[in-house]
Image 1: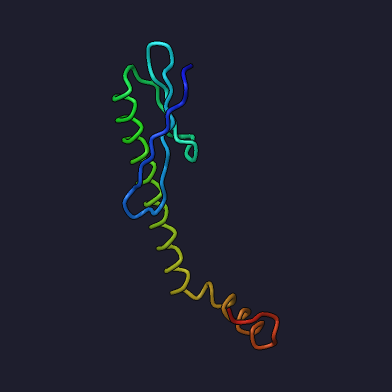
Image 2: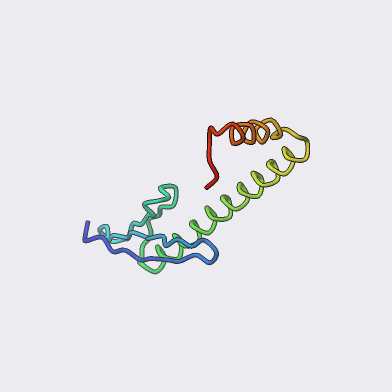
Length: 103
């Protein structure tokens, strides 16, 4: 394999830069994102590889977004049904007795 080449991408709204790592591998190219091992590909040309990695990374980001929305909904449901009240009461009691301090 030849030397590894890195391409950075900044996704809108994410606030983090992700790096596509690509290498020439014989007649083709291989690539991956180190922070997301599920995003990897092998293609015949560098352009195909970069396009494929971008598409696969987009799918991963959409899945994370959907999961975050599900967590938010679950949290809101738990608040509405009072499932978290006990934790709020414990935190307030700890604060009032000096076991924690305001930051």
